[in-house]
Structure formats: C-alpha cells, structure tokens
Amino acid sequence: MYQFISKPAWTLVDAKKGDLPPEPYVALQSPAASPEIFSKALARVEYRTGTLVARIEEATAGAKGQVPVFKPPNDLPALLRTADQLLTVARQQAGARASVWRCTCGTRYAVPFSLMRPVSIRCERCGHTLDLDPTAAGESHIADPITAEVNEYRKAVSALFREAMARGWPVLVSKVES
Image (cartoon, rainbow, N blue to C red):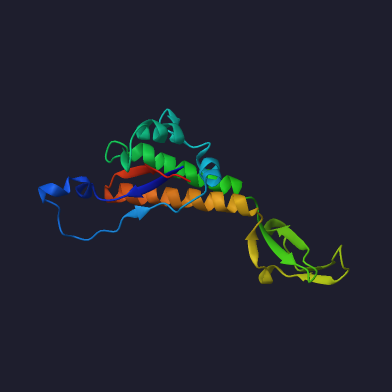
C-alpha cells in the first residue's frame, strides 16, 4: 500500500545547504486506507499508457521514503485526467440516488428519486405503516459501506492530485507497511 503526499519542491532540497525559505506550508496528504480499499480504489484507473498502480510501483521499486512520482508541469495534463477518471469511477459506483427509510423494526426501504411521491406502505416484517415522504428522507445513496469508503478514498486522492497540480507541487509516494 502507498501514501500520497504533496509539498513544495523547495522542501525536497537538501537541508544542509541552508537555502530553504522560512515560509510555512501545509503538506497535502491522502487519507489512510487499508490495502483492500487502496487496491479497489485504484484498480481501473489509468495513467498515460498504463495503470496508475503500475506507475507507482515502477517509481517506488527499491526506493525508501518518499519518492517524487508526479511532477508539474510535465505530468500536469496526465495527472488531471487521472483525477477526473477517479471521480468518474466514484460516481459510477455510487449507485442511484434514492431516499431511504427505516421501519421501527429495522427494515430498510429505498425508493429511487425518479419515482418519488408521498405514499404509505406496510412493513413486510412487522406490518407497521410507513409514510414515505420525499422531504423527510435521511440517506441519499444506496451503497454498501465498503463501496462508500472506496469512493471517499477516490475523491480524496483526486482532490490531492488537483490541488498539488494547481499549486505546482510534486506528488510524492511512499510505501506504507500495513
């Protein structure tokens, strides 16, 4: 598993030279994710002519610590396309937008937004009457927790890539032992 971080290029200069500017900066970091979430999130994502994971593994092979993998301005268009692709895959896997209700017995009922109008139904488990009012729904997506976590990770990595390229900072990758 890998951790993405972005920080100004001047912080990569050897500190012994003493030519580091004193300005503070905030390093951008991807959130921590389990190896399962990481592999699912980046499985179908392409970078230039290969996959994003292959590019990362190639760049970090045999390296210890943080390795600059994506550097502006040369990698800017490709990394922005990769960020767009991460968001597109997240949207595709998010599922249909729906309103979700729970009965007092715990049974979940979901109705797609396209079919919404106020209606009352009987719970299949306990027989209690539920009023399905589109203005009172709590959840807005039907997704299992793993898919939701994978999509949140995709969105966070996409945001990191976009922000790093907007600031002109390289994206560094470090291998994290799990």
